[in-house]
Length: 399
Image (cartoon, rainbow, N blue to C red; front, side, top):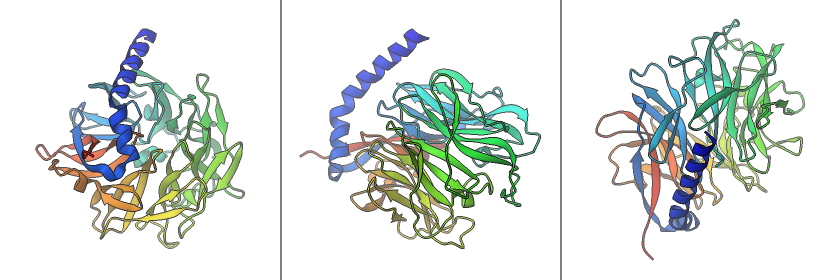
């Protein structure tokens, strides 16, 4: 296995070196980008896949459904191959790499069903990403060719892993044993949960501090400077809403409120680059309890949170990824729920489909962007109608 790892890593370095001059030029000079070439990634046999992460080696992670579309499995696409990571509950249970995982050391992290029934009947955060049917769901770490390992909780049943940096530190959130009265009456969440970090190798779990007065939270992204972003609030429904009263940054053991763009709910960072720039989505209306009018935001390292708006005619948007050049990707939707992938750069949000004229299908979600300007996400195959994972590679005009 160690020899395989070295061989694959060497292949990755060669592949990355071959594309560096072109791709880095694309990122440094986005005004020279005239279009993107869309590549549809393979599936595990079903008709529903999604790419949620791309690192600087071009390794893509997300999920793909096997034949029959009954479940989704965490999946990695690397060097022309697709790897099914399975689940800790077996082939008939769900798993996913649901957030960008930016390291280049061969680690991916995500969520998986275990097959064990939750005695409290909680849907947990995993229920917003796949149907759990009341199963216990925990965070996992894996090398991307297999070997999924469950991450410990704070004593409760459920956990969630959202990202791993190049130091092997993984972040997310996990339940403790406290029955929290701030859990919402309209949800099935019972136990309190806290933002956490797991060490590399030992998987020792560390609880992160909350904003004073808050009871629950989650860590959603980490960079190589050990800066972590996430949310702090109340237990609520175990995801978003008032659990995300505050968007926060953890650095050097301290927690800092990142501010908001109009409301103290739905303030959720999705990614942080090595510079410390943060992107995500945030509430714009204190009365918008359902999150219908949230907007994508950019919080520069030394600046205030900025509302990025929406695509023309839309009511809501979400930023999901940011690279070192300040390019931001995400998605925007109208009142009917139609989703469109976007790229934000040089102060303007552009529909990604408009930059990929040779692709006849829909580009619904843009979920991550690497430092070479490559974008991944979810779209619709124009020939089969299947929901596909894609990679968008920038094409430059000649000088």
